[in-house]
Length: 361
Image (tube, rainbow, N blue to C red; front, side, top):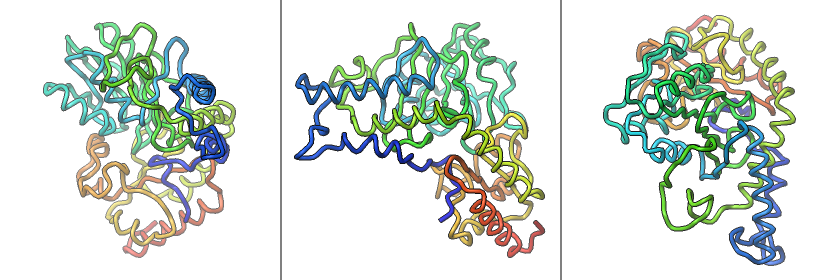
């Protein structure tokens, strides 16, 4: 299998896996200890968690704290519901974890539109009384990079907080400037699934979603997993040392993929984007059929979270595409472990599948 679905999840880094193993524990190991217990084994597990917390914090701005969660969805819920903001404004291309939560929390939700390039206008009107603005750093479907810092300035000017979903950007790009709350997920930066974090700027107060314990500063009750957090921490540490070489490798792959699919239309901005995400469409293409025929290539026709819904991508529709055109798009994602030869092979398979539909590629 040639894996080109890096926006859905990334391969687990071998170093992250190795960091997890001692904390999975067993009868002949103390790694299974509860990190909230006061005994020696528990204190050792707690210390490992704090080391990992420092590595994750290094990906984020100074002047804040890292709260471990089960993933970015929980972190985003904590931010959207826990700040006490009654009026919310979110971009039209946010992940469902933001859009669905925001709609449930604020029936009068303000949706900030994007242009045909998939970008929020930095001067978009923010309604008076808005308490929290949410704009993601990198879109998970089309890879566009949003002007978070400028929008954050405008949010702060009306007394609102700024929430940034940095799931697709963390470990790849610099942390978003100006945000008050940032959500990240381990499995999108070569760490394990089931663990994420919410970064909260110093001075920002949030209430817990759940009750039942004092863990994570009283904001997230429940026993933490030293194994998952150790894997997250090691994956984050690797990103701080490899992000330049990762970016250079991705740029090489991007150029190769763009050249191989030169006749396809690019969805989203050609310049304000992360090059590890290539979303393209071809007039008349049946994208679902391509996915079915390219059995040795893992790609996507949209967000993994909406897979099987049958609905056209809300992101592509927000760009102004018709439902028909939105169903001609493919998302190709690559990263640290993608080889150039396997990318060539995948592009050849995708092109062959398109030609089998009578299309010129």
